[in-house]
Figure 1: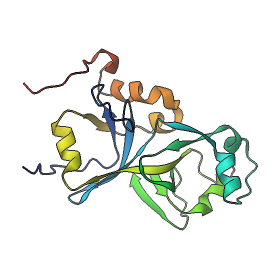
Figure 2 (figure 1 turned 30 degrees about the horizontal axis):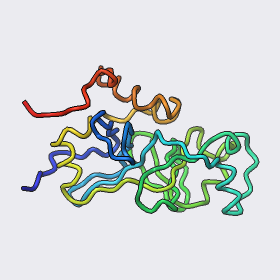
Figure 3 (figure 1 turned 120 degrees about the horizontal axis):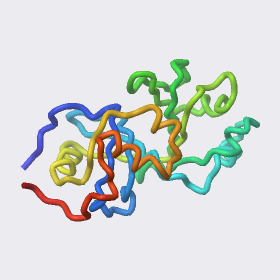
Length: 189
């Protein structure tokens, strides 16, 4: 049985329910970049890696000496194409491959933005991920029907200002929920 998409979750958060124990998505928050009848794509925004931005830029031979890149970790964006870098940011400036996803939220996949992060030429707020989460046609809808995820419109403050280890709880609080009080089992009434 196929579950039909009723409305797009682009520019929303997917908040993993406690019962979702998949190693990639356990306690994750996913910012949804795209969601349509063909499938969905998003970025996990609360999984910092051991790689700092400065290390990534060094590997790419990009010179950026800002304090920001020295103190900011790259995030694990998801299990698909783990080498693909993506930058979520709040600048309307156009780099080679920038698309607007929501009100003042943009996604850039070209490396030209990396030299500007943490400088006056770059976006004032950003996060960098490697990899992304992807769902085929109807797959996300089935996961939603199985109570694997809560959904809520994305919030810039959580996306850019909340520490990654606080984003899961903070995103659930947008719904008025203390996610730590939700049972690990799920069901339908």
